[in-house]
Amino acid sequence: MLGDRGDGFREDPENDNIFAEDHLWLATPSKLTFVNETPIVTAEYRHQHMLCDVRSPSMSPPRRDHLSPISPGATEPFPLTTQGDDSPLAVSRSSAVIHNATHSRFSSHEGPFGHSGPNFGGIGLHPVTTTTTTSPPDYLDLTSPRHSISSNPPAPARCSDRTNSDDHPDGLSHLSSEILNSPEALHRKVGLLLYEDRMQLPFKVAREALLFHHYMESLAALRHFAVDVPELALSCPVLLYALMAFSARHLSRTSSFDSAVADHYHHECVSLIIPMLDQRDLVADETLFAAAVILRAFEETNDSKMGAEPERHLTGTSVFANAQLEFRTWGGLGHAAFWVFVRQDIYMSLLKQRPLKVDLAGWEERLSFDLGFDAATDCTWANRMIWIVAEIVSFCFGDRLSYTNWEAARAKTERWSLTRPKSFDPILYIDRDEEAKRYFPEIRLGHPWHGMQYYYIAKLFLAVYNPVVPRIGLGAQKHRKSISDEVLQNAEAVCGIAFATTLVAVKLTACTAIIACGPWFYDRPRAEQELLLQLLRCTEMESARPTESLIQGLMEEWEW
Image (cartoon, rainbow, N blue to C red):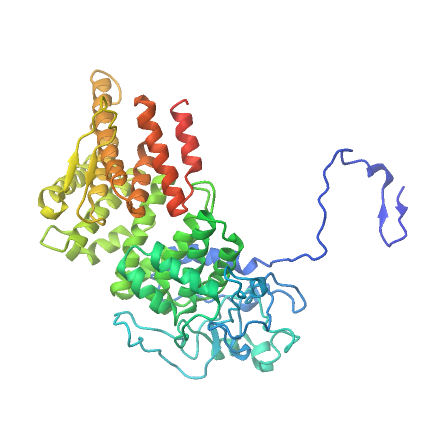
C-alpha cells in the first residue's frame, strides 16, 4: 500500500525503517556543485590509445557528439567571474572560446599577503582563419619549434562550452551559429594555441609571485627547470599552471598552505593539456613535455599513500617522451625533461614492480652517442648509469629476464665503473662501523648529480635477480647469505650518500633503494632501522613525497 505524502512523491510505509535508528545522516549544503568528468575519462582512453599508436601516421580526432558538455545552465566548480581581470594571466572573454571550468572560486580569496587570488582566463583555444606558426621566443634558443594549429585541426576535447554566462547566457552566443551547429566548421575555425604573448611582470597577485618564486628556489634542481621553465612559463599558460600546481602542492604538504589552491591550478592545467593530446605536433613540443613531467611530480606528492596514485600523468608523459623520439625534436629543455621522466619511471616501476613505460628500444638507437663509454661530460656519464638501471629494471619486472640480458647489464655496470671520470670518486669515504654505531658509510661526493647512487642501485638489483644462483639444494643457503650481504652493502652506500648531504634529490634517490630492499634490513640493529625511517620522514618533510605507508610497511616487515 503506497501512501501519498502530498508533495508529489509517494512512499511505502513498510520501508520506513530500512535505516538503523543510530544511522548517521550528513547535512546537505544549500549549494551543490556537480562536475561532468566525461571528457576527462574520454581523454584517459585516448591516452592509452596513443601509447600504442603514437607513431601511427593518422589519428582519428574525437567527435563533438562523443562528449557530453555540461548544460548551459549548469553550475561549474570554478565559475567565471569578472573580478580580478587585471591578473597578468587573464585574457579577454572573447578569446576564451572553449575552456574547462575556467575561473576558480579562489578569485575572491585572500592570498597569503592579503591580496586577492588569481583570476586565470581561458587561455588555450582561439579562433584562427589561417595557418600560423609561432616562432621561438628570442630570449631562449631551443631547437624545438613552437606550434600553433593549422586552419583545419582536429576538434579539441571539451569539458564545457561555457564562457562568461553574464555576457553570453547560452555559453557560446558570441560565436556564429555555423560554429555552434557544425563540428566540421568548429574544426576549421577553432585551434589550440600553446604559446601566448609573454605576460607582464611583476605579478599583480602576491600568491602567484610566491608560488613562482618557491618553484624556482626550492623545486627546480636542474638548470633547465630552474631557468628555462620559469621563463617559458611566462608565455605558456599550460606550463605556468603546472608550475603553480606543483609549487602549491609542495607548500600545502610542508606547511599550512591551502591544499585547494594546488587542486585549482592542477585543474586549470589539465583542462588545457587534455585537448592538446590529440595534436601530434603539439605533443612533440618539448615545453608541453616539461609541463607533463611537472604534473607527474605533482602526482607523486598528491596522495598520502605511496603507490596509490593512478599514474595518469606518467602515462601521459610517456606519450610526450615517445613523441620526442618520433619527431626528433631534441633541445636543452626536452633533453632535461626526458631524463627526469626516466627517473620518475624507474621510481614508479620499483614501487609497483611493473615494467617501464619509456620506450627503451626506440631510445637506445637515438641516444647511442650518449650511452657508450667514450669521453663525455660528467652529466652524460651520470645519465649513462641511469639508463643502465632502466635497462635492468625493465628486464627484472618484464618478461626478458635471462642470463644473457643479466650478464650484459652486469658487464655494462662494471665497465661504467672502470671507465667513469675520476671526478666521480668520493671526496670522503668512511666505512660503516657497527661497533661505533656508525651504521652507514659516510660518502661525500664532489657534485650532487653524479650517478654513483644509481651505480649502487644497479649492483643491488643485479645481486637480487642473478639467474645463476641456485634457489634450492646444496649451496642455496650460502648463496642467499652472499646475496643478502651484497644487497645490504650497496643499499647502505646509497643511503650513506643521502645522509651526507642536504640535497633533497639525493634523498629521493635513496628512497628508491629503500623501496627495493628495505625489508632486507630485517636482521640489522633496530638503531639502523630507525635511521632508515628517519631518512624517509626527512625526505617527506622536505620533498612532500608521501612515505608514511612505506614506513608502516617496513615496520611490519621488521616485526616492530
